Structure formats: structure tokens, C-alpha cells
Image (cartoon, rainbow, N blue to C red; front, side, top):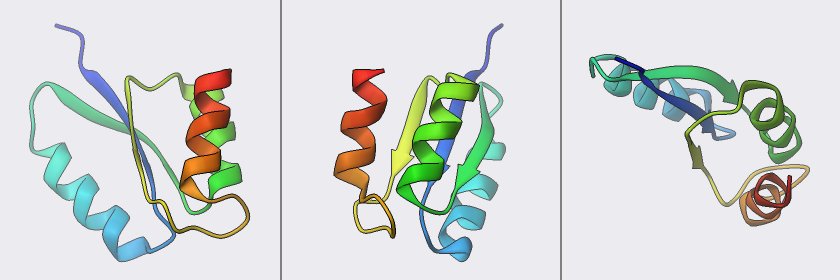
Length: 74
């Protein structure tokens, strides 16, 4: 069975940690990466090809909406 690959993008480490802990308990899901700003989220999405990106909208450098648009454009 292929696991659903998830990238978590949030500038708050505690939020990323909580989401990762919650998602890691699911047998059919795996967190493949974490990003603390929009630019990093775009880079990691390109490198890791996740199935799902959980994106915070209010992040430094590039906000979540802009990062999402860049990921979808790629």
C-alpha cells in the first residue's frame, strides 16, 4: 500500500510538531517534510512531490497563498 505523502508548512514549530504527531499515527499517511516559511514550502514541494500540503496562510517571506500558487504552477 502506498502511503499518502504530506508536507506541513507552518511558521510555528509547535503547530508543525502537533500536526506531525497526529498524522504519524495514521497507517496510510506519512509526513515527508516540514517548512517554516513559504519559500521553503515551495522548494520542498518541488523536491518531495507530496500528495498533500498543509499550508499556513500567514508565514514569513512568501505567504501561504503565494506559496500555494507557486506550487500549483510548477
